[in-house]
Length: 243
Image (cartoon, rainbow, N blue to C red):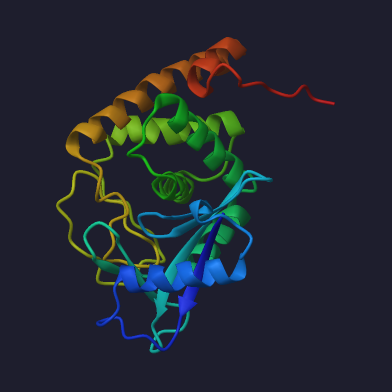
């Protein structure tokens, strides 16, 4: 679970991720006095709270509020100290709009993440998967079965090679210019490439894995072969019989 904290009254030019995470860390200690310090971990862009009993991990993401732009703020990167503009309510609305266009959107995203995990494609982050799925929905529609729409996702990656710039109607103009191997523009921040850290080698690995998975998924659908689906989603994958 991701929880975004908007911090008001701070100067983005004076603050750093270190000062923000220190503030969040101190607040977490105060809010949860009975939790071990080891349960709080500072991650790339967030502080993670682990709840041992439920197994739930909560990422606390600090964002400095932009008083001049409602709902927007600045989020810092722990590795290089850079900051980017973001809008949590806008991102929620973006997904809500796709769910209204396709009631199975979240299911398709979960299937894509399961494939990603099975294929061990760590550079393909969850947000990038969500945006690729949204782009396929925007450009190819929501017709067909879940199987067909999931195969479209794989086919898009395989066919495009992830060489096309992915952007959305929500992107404000002008859109940033990028030279990264994969460009997926954040729909709420047109100067942020969500896929900036994917290298050329990793792009080729993702495309190769999608091509292989698309071929397996096509065979699995044609033959109604559960074992073939397990090649895509892993040995624990199963389907429910219609009632």
